[in-house]
Length: 372
Image 1 (cartoon, rainbow, N blue to C red):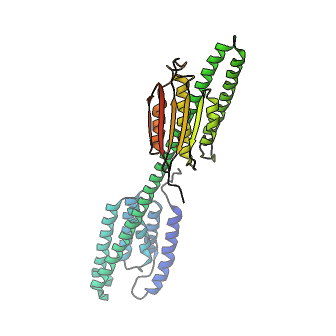
Image 2 (tube, rainbow, N blue to C red):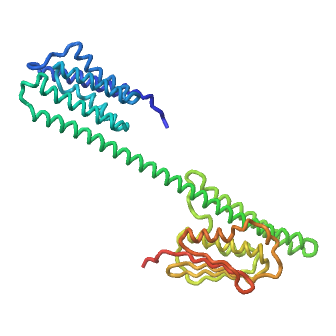
Image 3 (cartoon, helix red, strand yellow):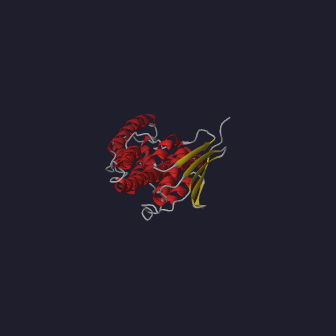
């Protein structure tokens, strides 16, 4: 963020030129009842613009000096009109810089000085009286109300900008959490699969080398897959990268084939799905297969997808295994809570628990109504 010095010489110069030049025209028009401009008048006309130059660094003193010079100029009967440019600017600045109390006090003092000038100065013989007082009061009040309205608009705009920045930070945080969850699911599934297949290969390499070769081929495929998925997830960190899901149900057959488990995949119905629902369903199936690989290797698994009118039902059921999984004691225990969080984030539910001799995970993910 660029910092300013607190000085505004260009604006002060513009006001100085405007006051001096237009005051000369006012002097010609008021030559019959006002004093002509002299050295003192020009000096007083320049005090206000000088104060404008330093008004941001010294807002209250600058406003006080500018107004005082204007009072002196007015009471010395110099031509009126353009001399009030500088007071308008400094009072406006006070309001915008949140020195509202000082601004209203100075505006009140200015009103009192001008009314007193109308009654006791050279204008007392012009018979303006109440009309003059009301006109001056109305002008100053309207000006101060306008300044307050501008201040309110600026503050609301700044508040909206802060809210927008906060929303951007929140969305970025949610994206980071989503990417972290994606990485967890990708790594958990593929590393578990690699671990199980590596254990199988080591066990069979001497007596059944062909079966060990199959396990090693699965490890190769899984390691390639995890690298590809990690690249896909991490690409969202790059500027201009598309924010697309890294996995969808169109890749479910590949996921089942790589799992190394006897899986039956059933689909009931079909309809287009929102990307976030596809991603959540894919990850729920992936995590469920990972849990079977860890805790019940060799179990029969059924993956069923039911495309309903208002929801997608994902059901993963296994028959259980009498042999403890090689990774049954490993892991962080965040698999089911992570799946439940995915479902809850979409407004759905997830239930996981024993089913007969095995285990079942059932997720219900709401879907938007289908267009006619």
